[in-house]
Length: 365
Image 1: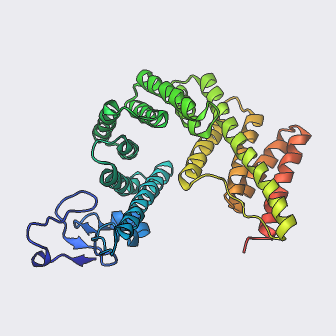
Image 2: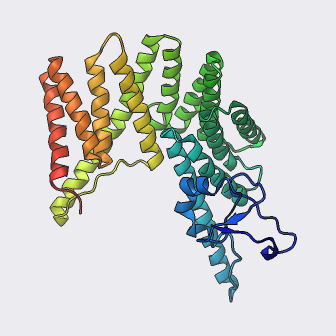
């Protein structure tokens, strides 16, 4: 980072910190188009800037001279594509941090997503709402409830003024309002908003979609806090089933594709979850939370615990994290043997262990 010399700044131009918008004192030497106060350069670098540093240069410098209108239009389209990419990339990175509990790191990435959205869509577009909600959730995680309320108010106002807000956006808004009221321990209001979250997510994606499962999960957490463990158990089971079905269906598709590719090309097939990094982090957060609930419950239910473990095995296997997949598989196998559960259950887990071992014996190169 280089210190900014005031005499080198054109008269009338105000340089602001990328994170807090205070007067800037330093500039990134790698891209030379990003400015910081003394406090925030490291936070932004750790959160997002390292990942997008060079991508910012064409967005923050003047467009080159073009010889024709056609070339200029092509250049403009490329610029807009870069903006769209950065909006989604910064949003996904911020989401991932939130699911991992890294609320401080999420803030700069979410701010970038918000500012790119403002530059592309204007100051009152409903496209700004997802970024406001990220910032609200990060603020809640940091214990800044008043700041979270401000972001949520901005999101609500933007939605109210919009005539084309999607069901998916309504779902996100109600989910974050639910989280706010959970933080304030107003569980009745939280339940109202999470019920609306589930309704709008179901309209957008279906009742059994992984994108709807988050609403069920947070509702289950409320019932758990209220000591209504039967209701919590029912909802945790539903969430587990949604994720298990998604991962199992995806695994079947992968298996068919793998067999076809081996037959046709003689090459090994690379696993994947079909999820982005934020969705993978969400799956880990939700499923490990449910596993903790199952393992700490007074009335142990080994079948339900094994079911969550098998879902985690499939998740980590498809993420190509063999060590974690094997860890959960061994845990499940031990539980099945100790509790003398169904022999078929034991065979299923042994089959998963064989798959994991095969991946370790023949790593992707």
